[in-house]
Image (cartoon, rainbow, N blue to C red; front, side, top):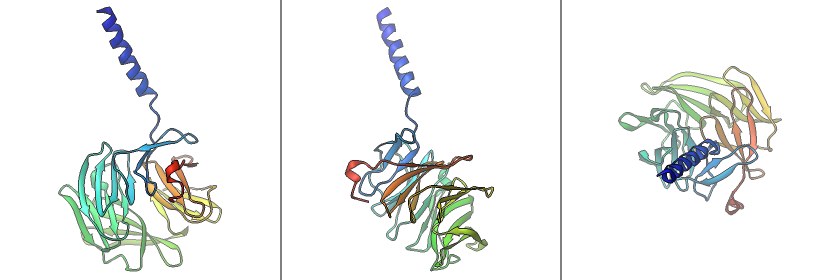
Length: 263
């Protein structure tokens, strides 16, 4: 009996210790040609591992939910892998965003010039004639249950912040963002874009940071509530941006050996 109790105590202690030393999970990252990867560890020692969703064309993850497009289907999922909703879409890659609740999931569908968002009744689609046909949407989010906020890049690479009412499909406000060049992105309330001197980041209070970064433009996908995956086509490198409220940081991501040459 004493030996049995000792084994139980040892097992419980080992499980508790394993839970305490589990590596941090900055979120999920997408490499072309590979299944979505869960990223573990700390800057300088990131380790990717296959997640539950297979390959995807584009993704957006918060700490609890994921929004992804794969094989012509847009899926809203929980982090545990369960699927909340599906929507069939055949067209150019959507712009996705998901926050801390399912109702925050919103997507711009450039192929149909419409907005897809999740409601208590499932996915709802709204055609948005207020967004010009030549507008390039680089980011969006719901700032309220029926208000969508877009970042739009114009042909001269200037950027506008456009706020729309979902109930009336009318523009509430449209403002140029001085000093910002497109494409620009918004994550965790912070603007990011490629500047002349590196990666530019501006928080909601107007404070600006410049981080050393590769040359040229980049693509950006949300890995979790505070982490963003950046890909620089010029030198084909992947980076993790941590949007700390005090001091953002940029860290090089490892590319799995089988992914080399794919992107």
